[in-house]
Length: 270
Image (cartoon, rainbow, N blue to C red; front, side):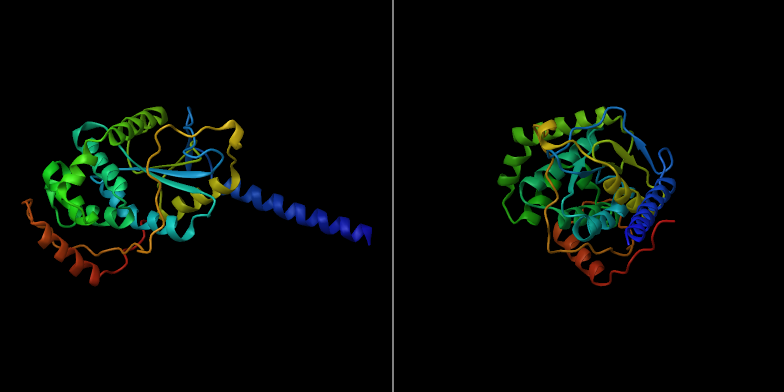
């Protein structure tokens, strides 16, 4: 009996080793991910995490948004933190980073991102890329508050500090484009295909460790963590691009609702 038990244990161990070795061969450094030379501090001490740097101006970010939102809401392990950090650098990206941070402070999350992306990339509503008044009006309507409340948050020290923090993290990681997804502050995932992208994230979360709480400290300024939401992401089919004129927000919202009602899933990136 002892021999049978020993043999069974050895077979199970061999199977686990083979499975781990197979995963190591399937996901390799340099092809599926790269290692950041100067790792970032964890946003929450002792917790595994995924950080997404993005910009509303980026079409690739717009395409990834519904997919990474679905992953965060429905597939991400419960003990893993997910943080979206708007990239800064240049007037447009910094402006759009402020839009995201102000929206966060007013309790807006995934659904707001979807609408802002859609308005820029599908409705071609260009004022949202740099017109303060248009952006504040958009945020106010989405949050159900008056413009004065948005203005107050827009110029707040907290938002200014978050923009500075985003810039520091970007420079530390030596990033050069978006979307940029980092696992556990150390592994930059390459977007080869959506299937491979999310499989690599899952592999890194399962196969790497983070420092225990006593050895880790949270960043002083934390980017707003993605909050659970009832609304699930809905991909919208392309619509005819409108001229780059200042479209009224009411007309834009109506167009968004019409497009979403006829939404069809987009094919995965190959």
